[in-house]
Image (tube, rainbow, N blue to C red; front, side, top):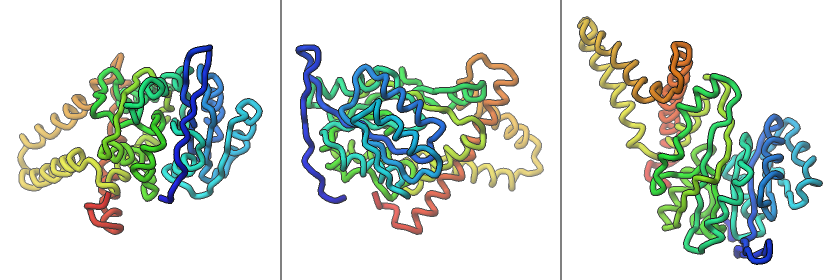
Length: 334
């Protein structure tokens, strides 16, 4: 990355005695005409407003840009940058390079912010200089029964998050600009998993994280199994290209290979097929279906379809990512 300007740390005073750090809120968008107004309205409703908002559009072909521009009167500190072809990582880097202030907040299109999100995610940075990164959280935003059931399988339980292990999504994160500079920004060679690798680099560089469970973003759940498959395919593909978490993915392929070997060896053994028939749904129940609230035959059937979409997307996506990585650079690249 090119050399960027020294972060500017400014303090503003509100209500007489409270001292608050000035912040820049960034976001990347592309073809978000259907959801961008929900995000913008949720920014307007914040109990504490950002000192500037920088949105980078990656080349929308719908009315996203026009919709954002319609908010310039309501948000006079809004800056829109159009950069056709920019992926999320490049869009965020562009926004941060153009940010005036030394504290960066990031959210995503397709989301809406809790009214106190900004206030709660910035508060730890206001209170001490010992924190470099604040991890916000996200909750499901759903409208149908399918989306509700999918949320149980996809979203983590924020009450059970481990502050030492949780890697924040850039749909809900705050960090000091100097931390971003220290690790060279977001990795622009990744279209997905870019924020995961960014987090890992921050941790490797010794940046100090704080988990703010009250800094909540609501994230829209995909509305059908096809989109959920694509979602997890892209996540796993990004992890494969970056060669992230092999210990999480490789056992899947070992189990699949062992199952094929046993099937080829014991194809005429009725006990093997009985065991396999019982093990498959039991494994799905332990991993996915037990999370479904108010279970019924219909809801468990929907959950099974969602779980199949998730697992198939992960299985194919990581293989695709690994194959693409091998073509580009060796496995020790980071």
